[in-house]
Each structure stands twice: as C-alpha cells, then as structure tokens.
Image 1: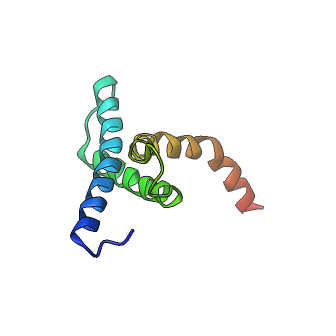
Image 2 (image 1 turned 135 degrees about the vertical axis):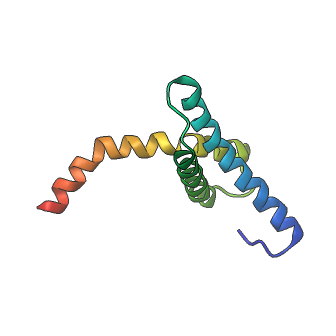
Image 3 (image 1 turned 180 degrees about the vertical axis):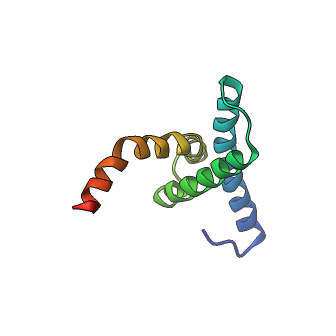
Length: 99
C-alpha cells in the first residue's frame, strides 16, 4: 500500500478508518451487552483490528467489489477469531511443541 501521494494518503486513511471502525464497533457491542469498558482493552482491540484488517487487505485486490465492507467485517471479527483460536487450538499447539 504505497502512501507517497496525497491521494495515497487519503486512501490509506480511509482503509485504516474502516479497519478501526470494525474493531471499535465490536468492542462497543461487547460493552453494551455485558463487559465493562476498559480503555487498555479497547486499544488492544483496535490494534488487533488494524493488524487483521491490514493482513486481509493484502489478499484482496484493490478493485474488489465491497472491499471496504470486507475490511470492516475483518476488523469486527478480529478479536472473536483470535479468542476462538486461543481457546480451541492453543492446547493442541502446546502439545505439539512439548513433544
């Protein structure tokens, strides 16, 4: 994602905003349901959303239909996917490493 022109900077800012919007929407959804708002967890969730959005964005061509929505969804689902991987697959990975 080259950011060497004003248009490139605008495009990058839009993409970053979409990723962070997805991540913040998910965390605020949790807060509205049952979880207490913790600023550090909010920042961690934004970082994870940014990272996952960047990774997913690298696999999608720029001219993909609904690209921005796919990136927002990836930001929204970043924390649940990582927690699922941690809960379900971490024991198997630990067993594999210990062998």
